Each structure stands twice: as structure tokens, then as C-alpha cells.
Length: 79
Image 1 (cartoon, rainbow, N blue to C red):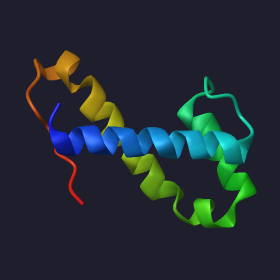
Image 2 (cartoon, helix red, strand yellow):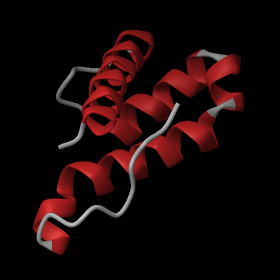
Image 3 (cartoon, rainbow, N blue to C red):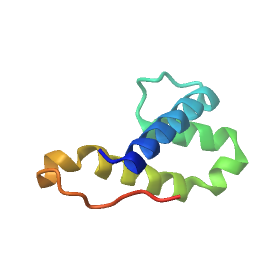
Image 4 (cartoon, rainbow, N blue to C red):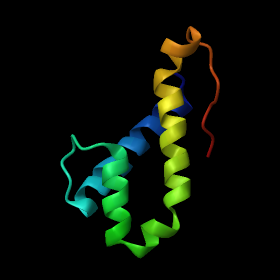
């Protein structure tokens, strides 16, 4: 995993922890469950919902790409 991908993964994990706090959900709840509940509790998050969902899709591709494509890179996050 390259440096940018690792940084994205760490930031995404922090986002997921924040969503768990806002939503009151367990850290073991699904990301979608935490996001949906957090968006109901925060108007600002609801405005960003589609971008956050896109980041979740990117995270899944980055984390699971080695299983899908024999470790070839599909995407590399940027600032």
C-alpha cells in the first residue's frame, strides 16, 4: 500500500469513528448504518452525504483491490 493510500485509510478510519460517535452506533455497526444515523443527527453531514459515500466506495476499492486485481492499483488518493 503506497503512502497516499495509507494516509487515506487512516483518515477514513477517523471519519468512521466520528460517525460512530455522532450516530451513537457501535464501532461494529456497518458504515452505512453509522452514516445514515449521523446524517439524521447533523444537517452538515447530510449535505456531504454523497461525497462521504463516494469516499467509502474508494476505501473499499483501495483496501480490497489486492483480492480483486492481483495487487494492481486502480486508484491512488490525492490531496
